Length: 136
Image (cartoon, rainbow, N blue to C red):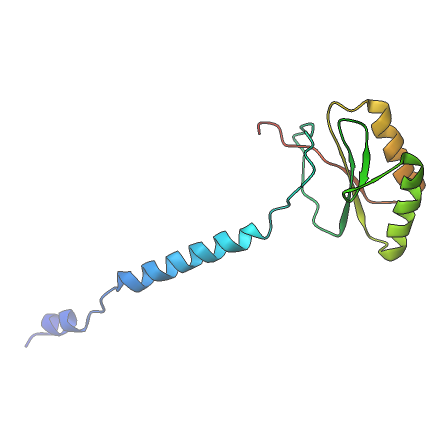
């Protein structure tokens, strides 16, 4: 028996079926894990677009100005006069909160500035303005 015959007998075979099983398992795992990462917004708002749009992930409170001009603090409608008090209360609970100002693009510019001003007067340091990325 020659050495080349022994090498052929000892060669390992690549088992493809277990590899396919592992690949499908990883695919399903990543698909299921990304479902929990999706930020779902229940209030329909048409956001303006910006190329520098980014997602914020720390503790965030959404302040929404709807197309009718209503102000929603985490899905609860409040008047503009109480917004500053609500923001201060939230800052006392957690100082590093991020306030995300979401506004329909049809809302009057002055209304959005008034809401932004109330948030700043309450002492919020981390304020983001929600936009959509262009090209969506």
